[in-house]
Length: 47
Image (tube, helix red, strand yellow):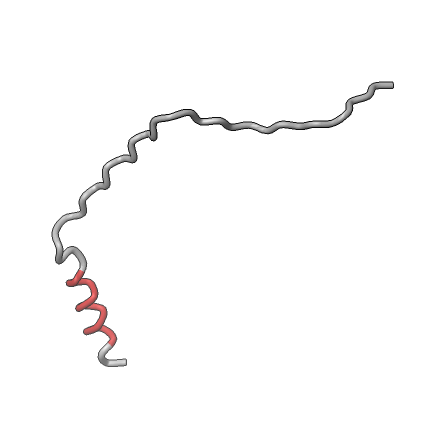
């Protein structure tokens, strides 16, 4: 238990060692045709 504060301190000091965070580039929309929706096949009757 007496090493827990030391381990916590080492873990916190390791944060950000590789530099400031870099925001990822947004994904570019893929070119092409997109089809979405649903289809139904069957018999419809009304009484």
